[in-house]
Length: 427
Image 1 (cartoon, rainbow, N blue to C red):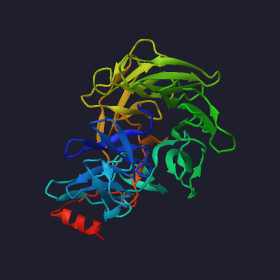
Image 2: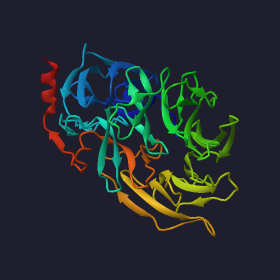
Image 3: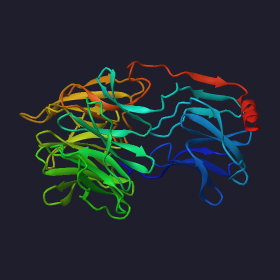
Image 4: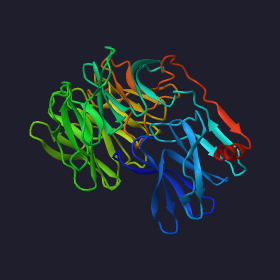
């Protein structure tokens, strides 16, 4: 699991082969930058553009997406430099995935444009209660940058990562009260929240002191955050799970594209490596409600699989039987089943027996609404289970939660769009 920091996404090779346009991702579309990589010098220069998914138009313009719209500006592909003084909005309501920065459009060599249309407001998301059939009930708290919701053990509160004007931080929201979310963290980027089992603390990653270690803070905001772990140079810690008795925190340690699972004794603040395989990505650990088992995802078999081991490990290991890339395990609140994501917009449940020996029973798989955002194998999961075991809190497009129905996105082809573009840019 990589840390949520600047990364390069959505490369576009310029037609002269001299450079590559890239998105320098910074956690949200609103904070990400457009860059150009010279293939001659191997130097990446950031352009003065905020957005994602850049493309080059044969008209001599750089096109990119921001706020659900396409913008364009003059661009010299020989010098790899902008030539315009300002960018121009050239198309509204283009579908953009705010969680990944992917903008769904393409420009053909003959000047045609193809894109997925997005109704106004659909690039904003909100917290929603979701049942396995995909029916969503809005909870409120809309915004463009919400992600990684986690529910307190009593089902009253949701903590989630969101974007503010001064950075990425953690917000806390009370379900069913109609109140506005409360910002919990300040001072440095804070990400990937989870709850202590008693609901008194929220645990999160923060760079407030220079590294990517873990902190916790009282969930009512009445005290300053306290450090739990310090990460080494080039290392990131991501909180995973807390035992029901509050004794243990499991977390993922990422370094050099490899990850492993550690545990921290919360009372003694003592950490130790728990599960690691050289060269493998082992991440997203979850402790069972009785803290006898730990589930996690791993690439040790060459794909993403889910395994269960005794906690603490004894050497025994059980692999969830499936041919899919399974990820994002979540224990059912009663400990009798594991939920997981086998594919985008799908969810599955597999009952578990532990006596007289550990085993998996027949799994059930069901499809969520096609716009559901579960998160891919290399991302953190974007939903969490409610204590009743029947509903989930997820991140849902704001324009769909009131109707809770599948909506066909329209693909639109605009012939000779280059002529429209040149006209707009000449104004």
